[in-house]
Length: 135
Image (tube, rainbow, N blue to C red; front, side, top):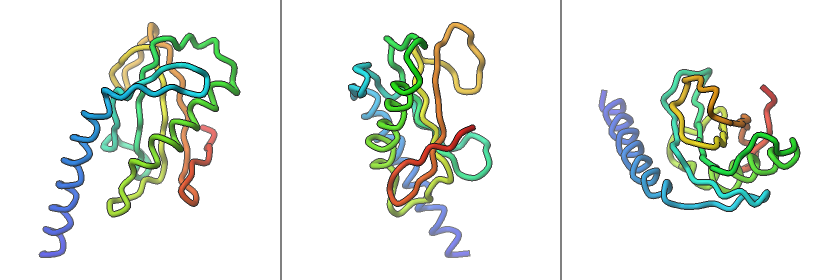
């Protein structure tokens, strides 16, 4: 019972720290390899899925959806490796998957909105880096 309480306390503390860091990160503007400027909308980890999944949702107002595949993949992989991975805790639970999304405006997770242009991909961690997993 003591182990459970300690684990619960550690996870609660981790969630509090993660929420505070997320609030700070929302102000940070990131220049992507394509030249788009993006900022974090939110990071989700409690949505249902097959194992622990961290979702990093970014907004890039100049995203058109007309970008070529290679450019889009380079931006998504960049966000995974240079933004998401460094923010994973070395002491907390490691995700089975990381999903990176970029949209032209903020949107509610899981709600279809035809006015929002969005791209996303899933990655698995391997030796500290992101490996693309085709959906």
